[in-house]
Length: 304
Image 1 (cartoon, helix red, strand yellow):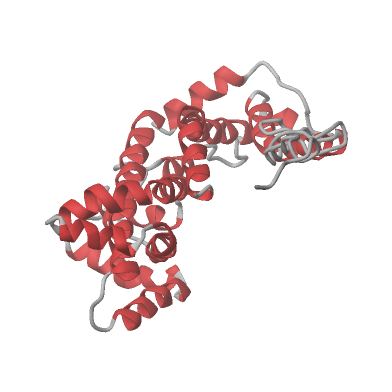
Image 2 (cartoon, rainbow, N blue to C red):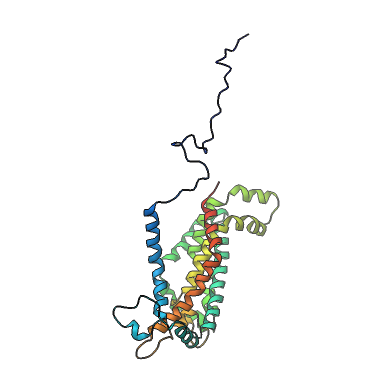
């Protein structure tokens, strides 16, 4: 029988977890926040000021008159004509109806693009069917075609359907985008395990149930990002709406703004006031849903 010496009876100290600090110069404790230095904050403030300058300048120009904007140097602080110019822009451009039309157009395009792009992206990412790669190449190839080339046939089709100066002429041609399909396909390849789909099929789930309970929850972060990008693009779209719509019919915000400040000398302050009115809804969307959008992005970025 082996006898243990006093030195052998000393218990061995368990190693500390890697997340805890071993000493003052050891590892950083788990949960400790990292703080940026003065240079980091200076860079962030610099880029924030640059990003906000166009919006601030629009508000400053909207608060002045046309004579003051023509002077040199231009004004760099607010004047007293902001509410007057906003009222003129709201009345002359019929901004109430234009904002409503734009909300309908942008909302419909966003819902349609996110829905159809997610379904098509799931099909290209996880389903097996004939000519899959060829069809994907054709979808990606449409991104290389300039939109100006499709204006004439698209307008002929809209005119034949008697949709000119109606909102469906702007909504239906953009309900799905090649970028959205490719974006969702690339995301679902890595975010949606094939074993999860096979397990749902073994349990007897139908294709519609798999899409609703498996695909959509997995694709939610990418859907949030795609929806944000699509809504901003649809709200700011000018090229096709100015062709399909008129100012006297059902104009969007961008079409309505073309009628502001007309005359021998355009009133730039009124134009800036109208542009400010058209920008405020986008700012409200980011303020209300900014946390959800950022949370969706972070949920998709952090895995494990």
